[in-house]
Length: 210
Image 1: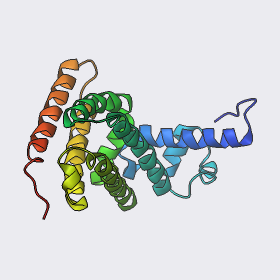
Image 2 (image 1 turned 90 degrees about the vertical axis):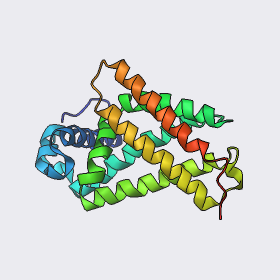
Image 3 (image 1 turned 30 degrees about the vertical axis):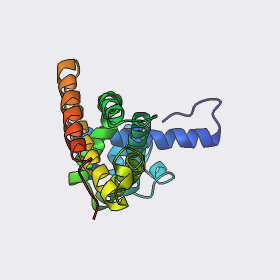
Image 4 (image 1 turned 45 degrees about the vertical axis):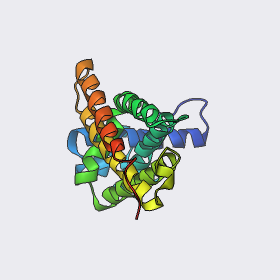
């Protein structure tokens, strides 16, 4: 990786760190992250292996950083979907539209999470699970403000949030595997996501927390 004239030492360091993450993300799409070696990633990033250790202690550390980046995207997605959600219809329609748009824009990161949450290293899988639980907790805060749920227990609100998140993760994985140039398939995913979320919501009015 060549030096860029005019960049500070800190900017160069951040640029190299991001190059390592980008290289690992790209290679993981071809081979799976658990199969990657430090040397492969260093070569793809355009650095020597010894330079890798100036930024990460191990490949697991790279994986954890990729998990963090991926879930930053997820959090932005849910923040966009929850802008002034006065009704269930608002948040459902917004979620379906934003889900497909954001996953298309960040397919590499969503693909990474989809692959590694099932077959990644122990450290990466555990990090993904922690982030999903945090994501569920954040969504619980949003749902607790909506009609009917304000009288639920915190545990039941979190259960409802978990159902929504699992649905979103499943549909996000479908978007990752949808070929480019197939708006018909994308619309079908949005349609099914909206119907599923509305089906979930139908039971909310009658549910009574213990």
